[in-house]
Amino acid sequence: MSEPEDPEPNAPEDPAQDLEAVLAELRPTLLRLAERLCGNPTDAEDVLQETLLRAVHRLPHDVRNVAAWMTTTLRNAFVDHTRRLKRRPIHEAITDHHESLTQIEPDGPEPQWSHITFDDVRGAADALEPVYRDVYRLHTFEELSYKQIAEQLGIEQVTVGTRLNRARRKLREILVARFGLGSKP
Image 1 (cartoon, rainbow, N blue to C red):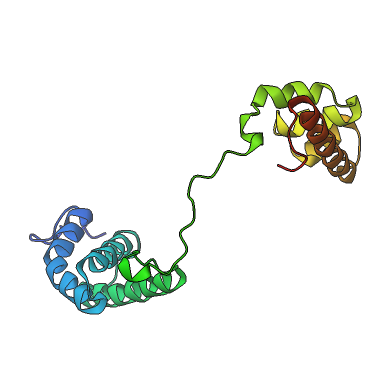
Image 2 (cartoon, rainbow, N blue to C red):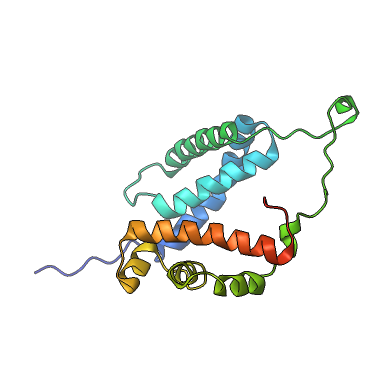
């Protein structure tokens, strides 16, 4: 039986420290590449950060050339970043040359419904018929699913939905009558 081999004298004992050292050494090169790809330092930092995260979480143990693997990972992160940017809406600052745009009043009057409190809704629910009130309370206040309500009340799930819909309509009528609100929220 042979004795276990001693680790190489210059080999690091902690692979995490070794990875950290390699990443620190590669960071300036990767940042320059990211800046060339992205065209601006902010996006380059984002792509580099994503690359470093991928390295920490996914770097294979048997990689022979860490620099090549990191470069490929950075390019993949750049492609992913570019795809995300294409899906994001374009934001444009409003300047003087946008004066033809119609300005929308940001703060219109508060809707009448905004003054109704949770306690008002709870009180109005008391005025519902018991068959609707029970379903409404279990769903709204106890946050039970349709399935849980159906099991608790011994009814079908579709019946829960129907009763909940009717309870909401009746609750709206009660709130409109109590608070003198318009019929539409």
